[in-house]
Length: 83
Image (cartoon, rainbow, N blue to C red; front, side, top):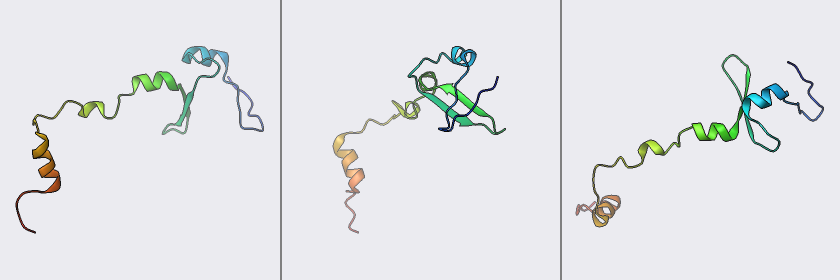
């Protein structure tokens, strides 16, 4: 499958590819270049659903139950030491 690049740098994504990716007019798409130099296009909405939230792994992991005053003392370095 091939297509022609316009003077504005635009191409038409062939229908077979649009259908395979579930692309519809107005949908966002992501482009990337892989290690082999090939361009990869994907449905940006689907990609966002499959990529884990980068903060999700850290949520709910603290084993220490901090009290506000203890945490503030630690953050302020209120250890009672004169520096």
